[in-house]
Length: 583
Image (cartoon, rainbow, N blue to C red; front, side, top):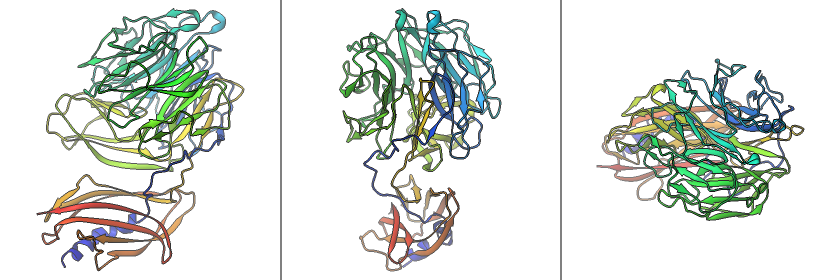
């Protein structure tokens, strides 16, 4: 049988010797976060904004924090990652002291380094005077000590977001303005980026004048550009639609639910391909205090929330992530003087009671997700998307993502000047729409083991890090192929990545087995192995394989299975992929 000569291809044997390992076949059902923080910062700041990013370019995510809020003039901080754990005291401390609120990291000037954008709120003992927004630019491995960009105008800015509403491939700065404590509504602003330089006076200002607390960019109607959601205090939440790169100044959608939003987040909860909107409503000034969810109904949000949490109080933050690695978005939610909560997504609906609650109680301001110890990273190779000749904004399948490695259009890699992205929100925005019929693909890394960082306003407490401790094998492998069918005489193209998730070297045995189209095992099994493999601490190997399918290969669907363990009785795990041979 000629199939044997193909299956025993020397290249394939080399591949299997590198990648034989296990992959859990079932998604986790429980929330795998530890309930007590593994890390607590030592600093004396009113911490508010939080954002993960590899600021120094060493492959590990660092934690940036904006400080001050309305309580003090504090420095902003970066807690650098020391190969898997954050430093306790920050190595970067800004020389600028301000009332820092929420932050966003992104490569604004396209020099390859992440820059720090921050909004400033206003000091309560001075009557909450409005302040300028700021950007600290990356100097290679750290930020400048004083921000070299500030706005000319001043506002009470709590929430900010970087986005690309005009679709030129450069990140623009968006500010949510207004002060509910003094009933001082203000317009919201967009400061556009021209070739890496932000304007200092906004070219876009909303017609609606509100006490806005948060802004978030997302393609609500799937038309290939970013729309703007705004969460408002003591009035309606709003969405400003983007029409071919022009954001309307009067919101087309407003909720009929008058509440007190303090934080918002986009995420597709029900898995229908449209982004839903989660809101944290605070009851300090008379709001309901519930976490709520507006459902996206084919490009338009429901006018009333379709989901409410059972708990209500000083709700302060929401963020989405697939915490339990079951291919849907769970909702992280925090409050002031409250524990952290996770509402699990079960079959497209959020639980109304939290599935996980931390053992802590603090004044939560931000809850952000990232793999601090790189123990759950998976590389996705050339994830293909549809190009219709109009769309510029594309979402990857897994987000938040850890690192964007390559963007290709028609098989050609784009330079960084031709796109921008937000790993927290999962979108990549191209400067030009790919032509109809062209392939658009993304190679990136995401984590199946997301850890949770929490910023705390209480300056006596410090910030927290809760580690994810999933119950999956110590060794994992991932196969990726976008060729479900291969003609006889053609080529099978796929990738594999094997990772040791432990701090110790791991030695194990692996073997590969083939199942024929008729469902019977191939008589020559195992077609490779058993092979002994050793991986060092946290070692990950990637292999890209292309090899021939002989013209005499039987037609039908083959199943390829790799098993790892200690023969003959101990099976650690297995992974499987299928391909179909065609005439």
